[in-house]
Image 1 (tube, rainbow, N blue to C red):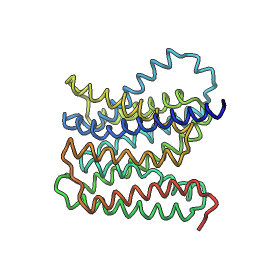
Image 2: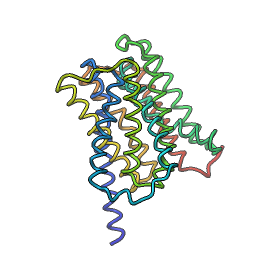
Image 3: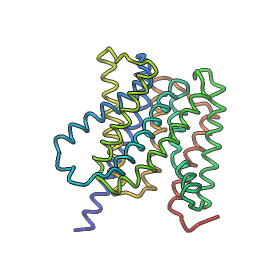
Length: 305
């Protein structure tokens, strides 16, 4: 009975993971539609987190019993730091979509395992095994090929800037993951994402006002896109990933997440007619294989160089 229950949970988690990745892959497309409607990137980011945090606030009020667990000042402080990192992640990545292709932006922002591996090496003093080194080398090589290819294309307005912003988004997303990893072990998921999304929304809203973006979207279509971005990729997509992490290995989830840039590229091809150049395709393949190798290296602690 126990084995059946575990197997059933794994199947459910696998289905949730697959659906979550499909939903998350639509984020780049929805952002492009919002930008085409002249919504500033910071406003898109603030709305995505703001709407998500508002929905979570209603759930928190409805389920008051979740606060029986003690939330210490340390928990709150880490959640705010995590939220700041998340705000930087979305602000830079969404901005990158104004300057480079969907495929390149989605692929570069998915380099999280590379930066987590580097942080583990230099900050946590963890050794790098051969798989991590191979993965990092392939990821860096793939990123360079993508940058060179995008620079040769005329469809992107400023590919160097866009790709650079996407990489900053990946680094800040890695910091968000590293800060939140220990915090999620101490408090329930709902408490964590409510505090983190809420603090990220405040940071993004403040930044948006500071740069002069005071006007809210004025059309129902714009609000529908923003609501879809918050409810779909943010709440449903990321929640599915977090659920799957409890029942599937981190390696499987990380590798499965490589489907996000692939899905985004396919959608961009059909919706925006964004073709993938041969050099860009080589870079995407190298980058995705590199991420997979880096993720595999996370499970090979005993194999050192």
